Image 1 (cartoon, helix red, strand yellow):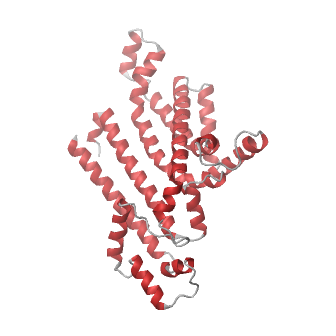
Image 2 (image 1 turned 180 degrees about the horizontal axis):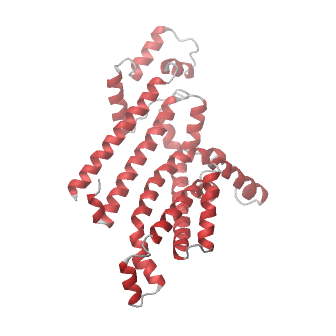
Image 3 (image 1 turned 45 degrees about the horizontal axis):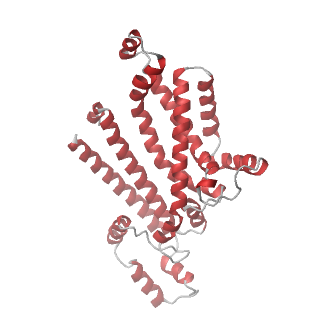
Length: 311
């Protein structure tokens, strides 16, 4: 088991390295001279060649590309994410100020999505083609048919403006997190609930359920003791991978609700073509996805050791 875990960790490290190569390549290909951008931010509108050369040396832009990549990739693990072309400040410090708000939103969205998915998935799997099953299917259709920003705008208009529940402009605290978290969680909950329903229905013909029923076990006991634990591996897989994608979807929800997090700051950076901020956020999302994939893989191996032998 230990050797398999180490192999999976090595695969995750290679995936992170590959993602880093792609993200750094996008940074290299970005138009404009970072040195001139930073000098403009510092108030030097027409820098001379000596000033540009000094800043390029300061940023390490005069080094060969492989050396720059290794320095940049190593800096990620030291918390060094580069310097913003727009503000001239370290990206890490800009992110650190906004990180608590993004953590609050992501955690709230994850909890909301898990609760919704478990509730709808269990009810739909318990009574196929019942009201919960139809509700889950309708929710999946709506959540996947409409983009996140449109759902957010509709909820903002209906709930915050018309009904007066919540704030139009969120302040990044738990008191105003419900609407943006629900918006961010809705699509994930819809998909996760259908995965859980399918996993529960696949167990209907299992021999151990017939034996348990023959021994007089109730439907509730079969669900809680036998069906749900055996349906957890595929559910945990999509939840783990979906938790990482919540970070990637945060910019949309944060922008709609003016949530003062990293996502909203990244959208502003995209508008200003501030590539160090954009690439730093992208790399964080890549590392989160790879890390969550590894954690879920190891967790499933612990729950169901039979999964350890799969490729």
